[in-house]
Image: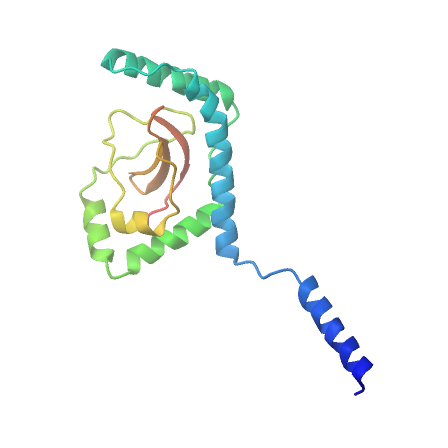
Length: 181
């Protein structure tokens, strides 16, 4: 092949290589979609929190929590299960939970879950986290497999459901039914 032919071939190979979209890890794309949806919630929440005055009074803290919850409900009147945990995102979370449940720390995760009080509730997005249900912490091994959350949001377990809990407003942001096998 002559000099100009080699140059043309090299240019064609570079053009094809540069024009090809980068391969996207589908699991990473789902986690990114989760973070985008959660970021949208946090952006909606930020001005509502900003208008609340800080306090050290327990009575005012409780009232502040109720007001924030009411404001969030008003800002998200159509919020439904699956708005953040879409079916695809839920499937990815179940996969990640399954990995934690089968790993080397599976016995500890299962033991921790067995200590939880067996409670069956009908959960709804925007409802207050049920006061009669203890705020069961999520086992650390399970948490290590899940995407990180903003400080104001945490993962909670109610029976086999994974709940996205706004701790400051004490409301259910979203949940995955039967997330824990």
